[in-house]
Length: 119
Length: 107
Image (cartoon, rainbow over all chains, first blue to last red; front, side, top):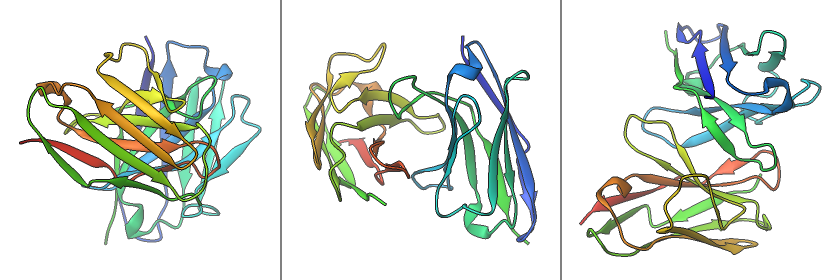
């Protein structure tokens, strides 16, 4: 069974930093691209970033480019999202997501971790 | 960035009726279009990918159609568990983008 467990969310002041982690299990981790999707309170879904199975390629939404860094540790089957220079508009639930092997869609979601940026 | 526009924002439907949800892309996304369902307090669930292929375990009452810029999700006979918010998402060009969602509510 695929399991994705996020951690690291919390309250941070504007301009601050936070690192999210996602521990994955139940599948061949290094064979799958992974992503982060966020959802602001009461709002819709937004792709934040995607990383290839090897970790050699990453893609970012314009809204986070230059501030967020997505990485993975394949031996530890763990993802990391380093978030710097946080803004109020980054407040959201951040979901770890397992991409389909063949399609640009999400087959499995973590339960999410809430990030609140506020003074 | 490709903008995905869903309509209507809210759809009121009676149990057993057909529901038709629309999704329009600002540029062609070929057939790289997916639909997700999200119930309150839950994570989204993949329903349809490739515009018309049902994901594993999705009932046959859900069907998708379209290509290019116009897409439709049809729920043939609404069941109580189908009342939720539905999102379309394109994966033709990065950044992959979602529509703003259509809420299907009980009439």
